[in-house]
Image (cartoon, rainbow, N blue to C red; front, side, top):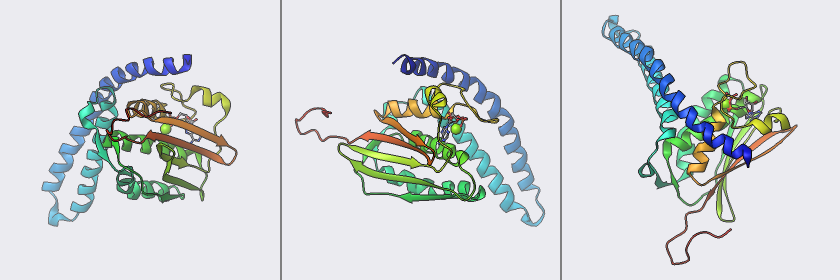
Length: 234
Ligand code: ADP
Ligand code: MG
């Protein structure tokens, strides 16, 4: 419980730092974007239009990732709406596959029909991204990562399973602590964000890990109809 508490209070700190850092990152990005657009206008025969468009698109994507990351601190409940978790996953599948293929790894998506949930689209995207990227980073070439959805009792489960090296108990203890990373170029922010997003969705994160790899289970409570039966009981 002490560890839970530490996680929560340090998330405020992340929010404050992220706001400051993002400002510093966005300014140079805006400059680069501006010059790319100038290049596009001064581009003989439109030869490089395609490349320039991709560069601008990717900058915009990076920018929106920062936005999503920052919104963690002040998301309104109005950003939540009833939606199908699988839609978000299908949406992300091409991006995930590109990430995997460029690292010589594979991603398999296996979905089951699941009831709609009250979700914040951007946040769930962020959560999935942070977890599958960790999975890919933990795996050697030729390995596979699975993204699955299924029903289990009163829950809709999102399971992300990798064939990585597993997580030691020492590392396990510190998961979600801001800036904790075992990577040379890690931020140590990914899982802290995931815990915050899961908490906001009343979802639980469970982890199974061993020599064969690691599975993150994100368990969302099914939304109950207002039929007079009141809240979910465990
Ligand atoms: P980062 O990825 O920047 O290091 P994270 O918060 O995403 O930060 O993860 C923190 C640490 O948790 C990682 O540095 C790694 O040691 C460990 N970790 C997270 N996911 C996995 C995984 N799927 N397999 C092995 N280790 C993991
Ligand atoms: Mg990470």
